[in-house]
Length: 227
Image 1 (cartoon, one colour):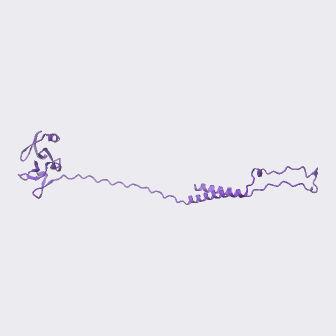
Image 2 (cartoon, helix red, strand yellow):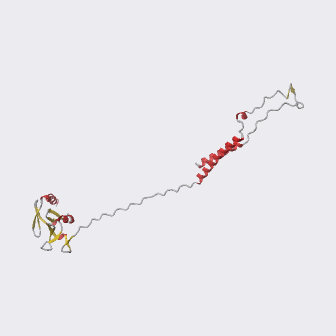
C-alpha cells in the first residue's frame, strides 16, 4: 500500500512539472516578400518561386496553452494530492508492526484427587448419665426401642445399655451392611443371625428370637436371597 502511494505521488509530480513547462510557441507565418536577393530568379510578382501556403500549427489549435490562473489552480490541486500521498506513504512506512501474539498453551488441569473411601466406623457414641459412652459395633447383638429410649444388647455385658436415643436415628448412623431394621422396635446385627424365616429371626449367643414386621419383610427377604 505504501509503495502504491509513492508511485501515485511521483505520477502527480510528473504531471505538475509537465503542466508548468512552457509549450513551444507556434512559428510565425512568413512576412511579406522583400526584394529578391542577387542571383534569384523572379517568377512574375513572386521572387523565389510561387507563394507558399500560410503556416498552421494544428497542435496549437487543438491544445491551446492554459491560462496562468488555471495553471495555478490545477497545480495547487495536484500539489495537495501529491502531499497527501507522500504523507500517507511515510505514515505507512513508519507505522510499527504489531507484535506477534504469543501462543498461549493452556495449562493442563490438575487431576482431581482420587476418591478415598471413608473408613467404616468401628464404634458409636452415646451420652449416658452425663457422660459419653463409646460402644464398639462388633459388640452389639441387637437394639430394642422403648419409646424415647433404646436398649442396646451387648456381648460384653449381660444387662443391656439404656440410652436416650431414637431407633430411627440409629438406623441412619449405623452402617447398612452390618445392621438392619426388621421391626418398628428392633434393629439386629446381620452377622449374628443363626436362623431366619419370613416372619422371625433367631440370633446366636445366646439364642434370641425376634419378630420380623410385615413392612420390613420384603427388604429382609432380599437380604436373605443375596446372602
